[in-house]
Length: 388
Ligand SMILES: [Zn+2]
Image 1 (tube, protein in one colour):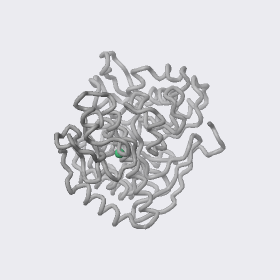
Image 2 (image 1 turned 90 degrees about the horizontal axis):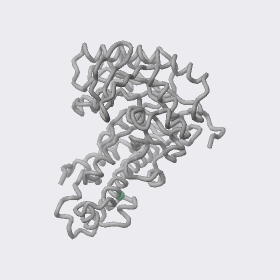
Image 3 (image 1 turned 180 degrees about the horizontal axis):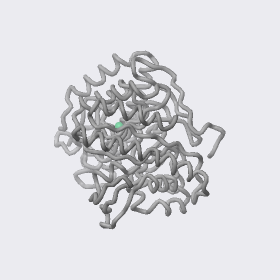
Image 4 (image 1 turned 120 degrees about the vertical axis):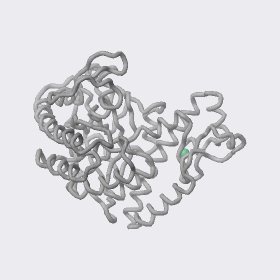
């Protein structure tokens, strides 16, 4: 599968306002941007086979360092051939750094300059993350793009706390870079082609800190891409959008920007409008398992009794397998009867919806119609944007 393609090359094909469309060429395949990455938390996009994920048009998926480190363990994944072979996904994979999961899932025991000590949410065992250990874990998992270990704080954190975490994240980035360089000289357990390491912009909802972070990480190295972290963690949407405006002014224009953990439809459209190229979010599959689904006129619940006799698809404009073959009346029945196929179909539809949304955005940028397209899209989506 390793071809002559470059390790990582980003080409911008067109821009429209701040929105851009292009391609990231990598050895395991090309990523068309703007792109939505489905999340494969535990080496599976929940309830979806790899070929079904690919059939949605997804070019890249995300694996979670925190979850895979705890179970089955990064070394075991490496001994089983690396993450691509382990889960049978031959295209690009990105692994996050675990910084967000340590904050949100684990019982955090101690945070020092060295790293964090925490208790596993699975069995309570004491674990440690340092920039060096996370680089080794991500090396063993073998993803194509790996993220630095960072210090994430809640979205509404005050300036002093956000500053401390941002500055620590820059220091940890330097340690990640050194560890990453050392690891590349070592033999690995799994066949790992060259990986690309992304730094992460932090700084909470404070414009000066975001600016400082985006500048400081550029001083550490000439990175091939940039993560924007610590958003969608409790702050308001206007605050998040304002930070994107600030950050994307400072980041180099010829490098892709990845907005981490943000992926509701309206966020994707607003993010692309502010120059973001890549997104990920667990929402489509998590919502799918609880009966919620996206439509072009807002979010709905399949459990609604109004669908009992409804022969129409989840979304008339969607071309996914769920929408082209099954009715809302049938899928509602599957949920009521607690049949597994119901949550599989909704997960598939929701992932397809976001991947297709990014395809529409790419077409609009290429056509030079992004401003009008995004305005119309958001107006329609918000026209009845309640769970019903
Ligand atoms: Zn669909």
